[in-house]
Image 1 (cartoon, helix red, strand yellow):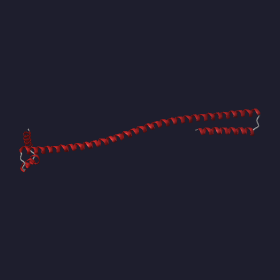
Image 2 (tube, helix red, strand yellow):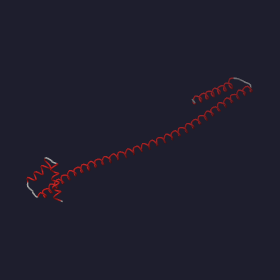
Image 3 (cartoon, one colour):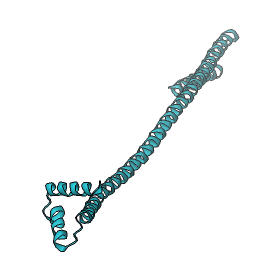
Image 4 (cartoon, one colour):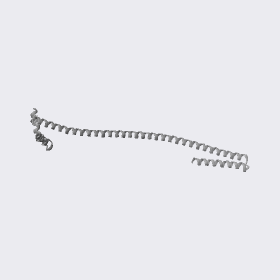
Length: 178
């Protein structure tokens, strides 16, 4: 748009110069008419130069405004980008913490399961040791250590578990100990 205006002004100046040349060369005019036309031409040229200066100032102002606005927009965009980057970093750090926490929880659950299964194993082991101690104390209480008694105890405690018989054996051992 501005180049078209410049071109138009240039053409106007060129036509004015041609007119000036044709007036001075092709016609004989009186000094006053010639002087009047020359002054009008000078006024036209001065107006054209003034329009060019105004146009140049307008373009410079527009360029300055665009430059200021674009730099301000770039600064705002950079601030937004850095804010997004910091929020992304926070999310990444949060995800890392969650991942570590999940791993810790998993390890704790595995260790807890191992501990629970070991405790269960110990409970059964202790139960077996108590029953073996009860068998031993029963043998001491009745003071008979024959294979038949051992087979009967094995049947009562293991093969065909009989809770009534085990209670009787416990009473006998308690009576013997007291």
